[in-house]
Image (cartoon, rainbow, N blue to C red; front, side):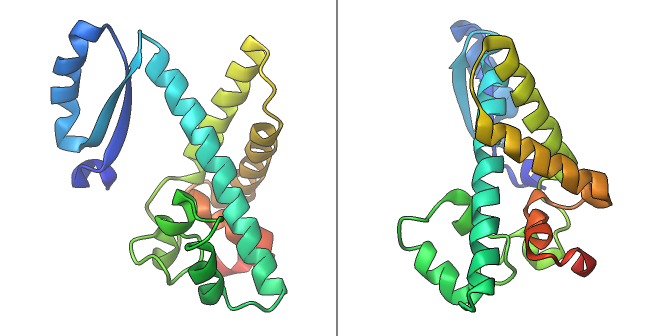
Length: 174
């Protein structure tokens, strides 16, 4: 869907002299194409970015689940968090709670969007890369474990924001 809409962000690893041609080829699908560095840098940027996204979404989901348990209206929580220090892309562009962000997969039964199976794959790649270079990524490891669990429970084809329902104890709602 994002490719058709031309809203993808591409991280490109290539020789500087090649980037303009790559950027032109990606233009129909891209909101932005960024030269990340030499060959391989695009993949490195993608797995780092997606690790950050996976971790961020889990934090947003945990916050919504806690807000609900504390009897804070989820829409009121969204209003507060989106205008204060909790504001982030996972909240304001891709809210896992149905309602506040019309275009979010949460408003389509978590269909479409970025599949849990793909997030799980990307987080596994990030953990493998971290192990190869000796980087400490404990939050990335926890995120990978949670998404792998969610996928193993049969939700790999749901959008990755559906992990909110795992945290709410509401998997039957999926």
